[in-house]
Each structure stands twice: as structure tokens, then as C-alpha cells.
Image 1 (cartoon, rainbow, N blue to C red):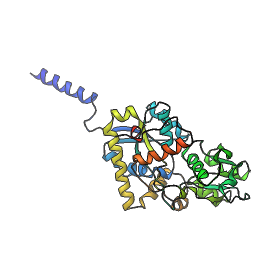
Image 2: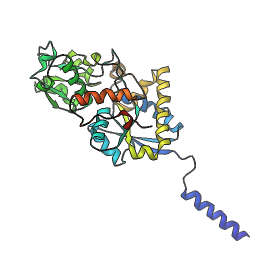
Image 3: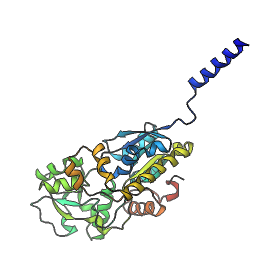
Image 4: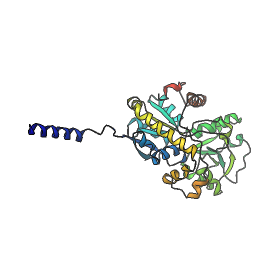
Length: 311
């Protein structure tokens, strides 16, 4: 009898050793960048909201072009990554299966998502004055590149006559100073920094002339992962929703979260405009980009928003 009891105890111990606890957190590697667009994820991590919903989230800070996030999602080195709707649509157009799982930020009048800055010595008065000029974006066919081409078209200029080049955003100011660039399209914190140093002057807050509610940054995952882990996707969304509720009730929470993850002086962080935070992406937000990218011949066929939005 004693031998049977000890054998049972040993078996139970073995099972406990090899099986994870029933309430073990799902491990999730999140591809993220060091910017205020990712504030909700920062808050959800620091306030324990991801943990509350059963997630063990690790941030993998990215420095490369957002288009490379799709490869990391397909290879499963990231489970969810920050990217843009144009990147997801181009991946779909190329036969990949990337799904949008949540929103991050939106545009609204008065918040300068991006702007056109020009060299201090350059006189430009209209959009057509940019024709023949060298204008830098951080990545060709990025969301800012697509948006500024649309703005040029609406303003009566020919985007094909503007010489767009690709430069890391941290080098925008030096490019203007050296007169290698005539204009740049930065986002924060580079937008404020280039103006404050006098390396560039504001030409146009072009995003204000586009529809409000554009989703510039979103969260995406590989389609196979989404289908295999619906509870993890739901938990991720729940963590962001909790963070959004806290942020709306206590906006000051953003300061500590940003200071934790963005290595900028406190006064710079405090003065930096915060983008409107959202946690959703709707079909109309995707259709906005599909229509514009079709007009710019960046997609081979129209894409149904339902095919890129995760359930």
C-alpha cells in the first residue's frame, strides 16, 4: 500500500513538473518602436493590464523600417507588431496573410501627425513650388509618403515631378542644413526638434486638410497566429482598452509611461504633442487607404477591408 501511495505521489510530482500551471500567462513578443504612438501599450505594460488579462508581454524595440515587421510576424519572432495599414495592404497584395488586430493612434484637426518642413532659405508658397525639389520621407511608400502625395494631387501639383528620397528621420535636420534636402516630412519628436533648432521651417500642416480619423499606426499579426490564438488576440485588445480608459480619465499617466520607454529629456516629453489614442480599426479606415493606394498604383487590385481585419 505504501509503495502504491509513494508511486502515485511521484507520478503527480512528474505531471506538475512537466505541465504548465492552468493559469500560466500567454507569452507574447510585441514589436514596438520608441515613440508616443505606442503609449497605450506602454501604459498596459506598466499598469499590469496585459498581465491582468493573462498575457506575459515582452517588448522588442524595433529600429528598422516598418515594412520589415511583416517578415518577423511571418517568422513568428514577433507575435504582434506595430506597423501601418499600407504595409499590411502591400503584404496582402504580395500574397502574405497579415491581419490588423487593433488600432493605436488617429488623426484629428489640430494634432500635427506630420508636416512639411523646408530649408529656412527656401521660398515656397504653393504645393506646385515643391515640383523639382528633393523631398525626404523616412521610407518610400510609407504612410507619410502616400499622404503627402495625395495632398500634392489635391493641391494641383504633380507628385511625379517631386523628387522623393528616403532618409532616416534622425538625419532630416542635417540634410536640410547641408542643403542636400529641400524639404522633409517628419513626425514627432523630430517635427518639433527640427523647428526648434532652426534647421527647418514649417511650410504646411498638410494632414489637417485630409479626413479626420485616419489610422496611421496599427497593430498587426500573422493570419495563422490570429486563427490559432483568438484568446490571446482578445486579451491584447482588452489590455489596450483598459489603457485607453485610464489615459482618458488620467492623461497625466502618459508622462511616466513615455519617460520609461522614450529616452528624451522630461521637458521635451512634456511639451511633445500627444497623438489621439484609439484601440480600434474599422473597415472605413482601411478603405481610405485602399482607395488612395489604388489611385497611386501601389496595389495591383482592390482589397476588401474584411480580408485584413482580424475577427
